[in-house]
Each structure stands twice: as structure tokens, then as C-alpha cells.
Length: 255
Ligand code: 13P
Image (cartoon, rainbow, N blue to C red; front, top):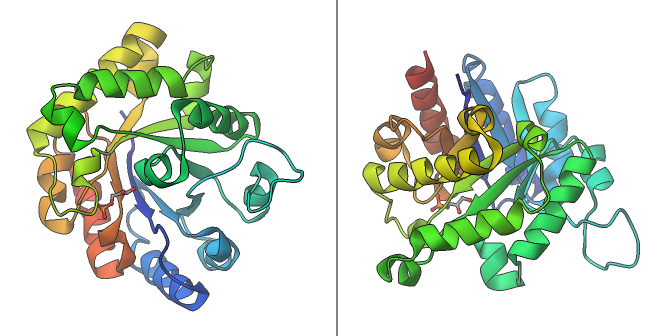
């Protein structure tokens, strides 16, 4: 049985004071939600202060990206050991905003993933098609290319430290959610591809999150789909009043 995960991607929001306040509210309001894995991913600058707040709680700290080199002349980049020293355990990789605005490719996602795994961290690997690709009937093909690229040279054993997030680009920050059926179709496809490549055990243990305009009002119908194992939440994770109900819904569905 896969444990549901609800992860909040704070993107470029919250200075340190705001981050502390939000982390504190999430911590206090989710003490009973022990059957859901809760992850918050603040900006790099807020990782340490949020880590201090989360100590002793079951809310896990994640980062939004990581560079693959251990150290060196890479101005503006952040390494695995730096993230680990802030208490980070998960790293989001290949988010569509990184691909769209910062030149991330399947190849660089793969390099980052290898570094995450070598350093004993866990990854949330994001895939998803644009509206143009969906309308051209190419959604599956795009996702296949993304997972083939991201998982090149990665063996089945590594999947215990990998979570996949399906985030259709057209549903991110648009208020336009994939229907539960659309999401389920791609999640089932993803699991099928993983099964073909890594076997049934790896595929059935893999958690596949959905992301794209998830909010309290649509969380239940999305998370009720058999191949949806949680959510990667953007806008609705910036307030405890909208993030915590999504966690509670996941908790109810896992009971
Ligand atoms: P929204 O929930 O704001 O659509 O963002 C989703 C997302 O990109 C999470 O990584």
C-alpha cells in the first residue's frame, strides 16, 4: 500500500518571516495526519528557518532544485551537502517552470537525479505536457521522452528514493485542473511504462503525485483515483487554510 504524499511547492514566495509563520501553522494543524507524508519545499533562503520550525514534527523539508556538482565555481548554485546541512530530504527536479524559464532539459534532470540519489536524498521528478502537445495528441509521447531521459541509467533499486509528479503544464497556476479521468489516464500510463522497464514490484510501489491547480474543492475526486498517490500543490499550499484541508482529505482517503 502506497502512503499518500502531499507536497507543497512554495515556488518564489515567502520571505523568512512569512515562511516561519506558514511552516508553524502547517506543523500545528497536521499533528494528527500521521498516515500522510507531508513535504514543504520553501525557497533556498528559507530552508534553515523552516527546518528549525519543523524539528520534532513529521512534516518533511524539501527543496525546489539542486545542482549536480559537489562544490566549485558555480555561481548561484546549491549542492546536495548544502541542502542536507539545512535538513532537506526531498528535492523537486525538472519542474516545468525550470524547464520553461531556466533551460532545464531531460539530460540535466537526469544529472541532478543521479546526484540526489548518490547523496542519499530523495527526488520528486516532475513531468508533464504543454497544452499544444496535448492538443496535438502527443501527451503520452512527451511524458515517455521525459521519463526515459530523467531515468537514463537509473536502476530499479533507486526507485525507493523516487517519487514522480505528473504536472500538465496547462493546469499549473491556471485554475484549469486536469479532470480526474485525464489525470488517472496519464498516471496509469506512467505506471505501465515503469512496469515495462523496472518490473511490477517497482511500478506498484512508486508514488505518482498529481500537480496543477489542486485545491481543497477538487482534492477528493482527484486523490480518489486509483493511480493518484498524492499531490504537488502550488498556489493552495501558500496558506495553511487551503493546504491543510488537502492533507486532511488525503488522510481520510488513506484511513
Ligand atoms: P498550482 O497548484 O499553483 O497550479 O501549481 C502546481 C505546481 O506547479 C506545483 O509544483
